Image 1 (cartoon, rainbow, N blue to C red):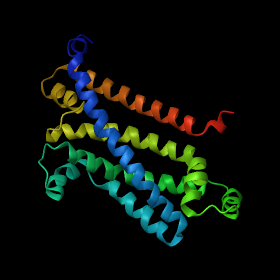
Image 2: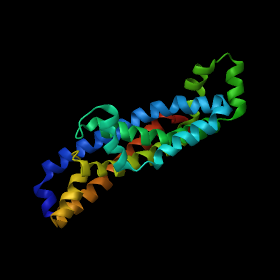
Image 3: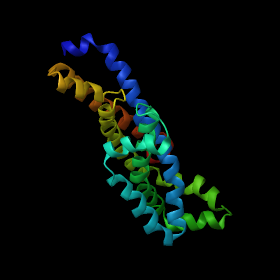
Image 4: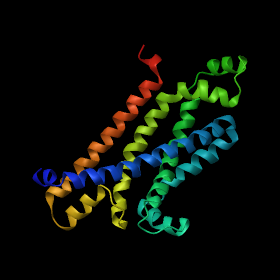
Length: 210
């Protein structure tokens, strides 16, 4: 505790970096996963390829992906863009199946009624299907958010600054206080992500609280 209290500025700075590296890919990944999931539902023949194909991306070891990014993107090894792109890939891998399950959870009679009322494909997706699929999608986003917070910490091994630095530095220098500060900070950040997603899901589905 004494180490953490004397290094609050450092912890805060690393926490902000960690938040960006975990949060930005979460948003981008969801924006990519929604149309991919919609295509898989709209065209069932594409579902196995889309769901299984994106799911396989999650099997790529994170450290290997972080190292490969500079070669694929032409960036420097310490560029945070490498981590953002890698984490976006992992987020898409987790969320495509979630979006598919969410859209499939929409009652068929509701979907048919919207179609009968003249709702086209995109309008039905945005106005009917996605709002009703929010609870299922939010559950998947919560898992992805916690996963991102955890995996991002590995980027400290390649020199990208975030809360993982406290873990590696504390371990290498046998500073127990720094190590525990990193662990607790990651846990708190994951909890804050989870609470924010739950609050947003409730705000998007006010009829569930009525």
